Structure formats: C-alpha cells, structure tokens
Image (cartoon, rainbow, N blue to C red; front, top):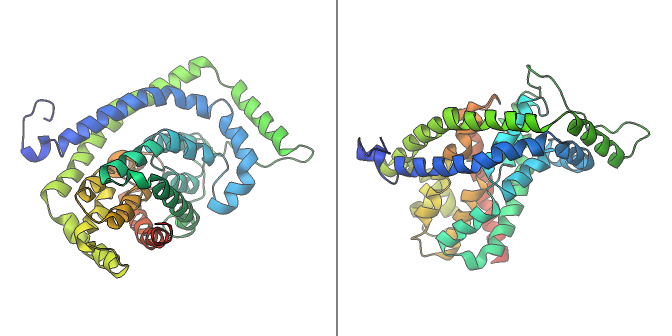
Length: 339
C-alpha cells in the first residue's frame, strides 16, 4: 500500500507507513552486512576470550556473563538491533540463560554513538554533546545495575534454551591463569568454525530478517505510528508523566510529556516532538531520556517479542516504564550538576 500509494492516508503517509518502509529498508541494508559479520563475532572465539577475562567484573555488577560486553560494543559502534540479534543467537545456541538474554536485550542494547549525535543535532544541543553523552552513560550504567534486580527481569527463569542446553563455561580451572584459559576456550571455539558456516549462518539470518522480521516491523511499526500521529492516546497516557516532570522542576512539563512515552513506539519521534521546544534544559533532559529508554518497538521491541526469549509486550512495556521513572530524576540531578 505504501509503495503503490494506495489506501488510507493514515497508513500510506510519510509520517506512518512511509517512515516504517524507509526505516525497514535501511535496517535491511545494514543487516546484510551484520548477518555475515555476526558469525565472525560469535563463532571464532572473541566472546569466549572476552567473557573469561572480564567475568569477575561484569557478573557481580550486572548479573550477566562477561561475554555480554561484546553485545554492548556491538551497540555502541553499530546498531542496537544488531546487539539484540546477537543476544538472541547466543540464547538460541545455549550461551545465555533466558534471564541473562532478557537483561542484556533490555539494558545493554544501547543506541549507537552516531545516532546520539544525530538526536542532539535535531534538538539543537549538539554543542553540549559531551555533557549529554556523559550523563547518558552514567544513567545507563546505573539502570543496568538496578533493572536486573527488580521484576520482571529478576523473575525471569535462569535456564538455558531446552533445545541446546548449557554450552558455555567461564570458570577458570585450577592450574591455569585467566588469560591461558580464555585463549584456550577461544581457540577451541574457533577450531570448530569455518568459512562455509559463516556463509550458511549469515544467509539464514538475513533471509529470516528479510521475509519474517521485516513485514512484522513494518506492520506493527505503522500501527504504533498511527496511534502517535492520529490519536490522542499518548497525550492521555502521558499526563502522569507530565505531573512527575512538573514536580521535578521541568519547564513545559505537560507539553513535552508525550515525548517521554512515544519512544516506546519509535526512537525518532521524541526528538521530532522536542525539536520545536525553546527551553534548552527541557530538551536536554528529555533527549537523554529518549535514548536511555532503549526499548523501541519498531527497532528492537518486535525483534525481542519474536525471539524465543520469554519477553512479551507486557513485560517490555513494564520495563520501559521502570526505566523511564527511575531515569528521569537521575538525569535531572546530573543535568543540574553538570550544566
């Protein structure tokens, strides 16, 4: 309908279906590369090597294996949906439990640095990007400490995929140093992989994205954007958030409150809503919030829901609200200190 420009304006307009088709086309083009690059990350020992070396730091803080740091790096320098796909694959092959995969998907699949700069440019606060990103990292780190320890994430089953069982071991045996064991695990893993496996695994992932995931992203993304563009539902739902922001001293709180919720539908919309706002501090705070919420249906939410990880729409929305409520006072406090 969007391609042929046939149908109701609500579906085919540039702000709804048109946005989702463009977004999905760009997503597919990125995933052509990611699909074939991901086996190089997962199947040749990088995650085993990293996991053993930093397990003692990562596990106590975030309750996840050390190898999850690779997911974080994939997001920072690539794309958050790439990190979610990487985590899904690790769960499917027995390297994460359901709880670990859920924690990583909803806390470590951060927005990439280039996109953060694009958002600051849209908001007109790019001259404050350093302060913007410092606060984003601090709050993101704090949320990653808190979220795994509260429901619904703390109630997730800490069990491996039944089809594969546990396939990971980061415990260093006696008589070996951490570096020796990390290198040994990485070498064993790399020895089991070959170029044909990379091609097969990459092709399977890309075809799955193209024919299974893309239609779902376009469909649900369009529905979400129709609710944002053509109904007052987000305005109604955001009233309590407006009250919360107002109490915490944010100017034009009720006017910008919808931006705090529409990010659940899509990561681009909050920046577009905030762009006309004239108060720099308000844009600065809500801009950081929009990037720290992480769970965007059109980008990563649908991928998570479609995966075998037991996270549904309800759990994702609860996690989104928890991240929003906890993050707002932290962002405001740090903004008042740094700016």
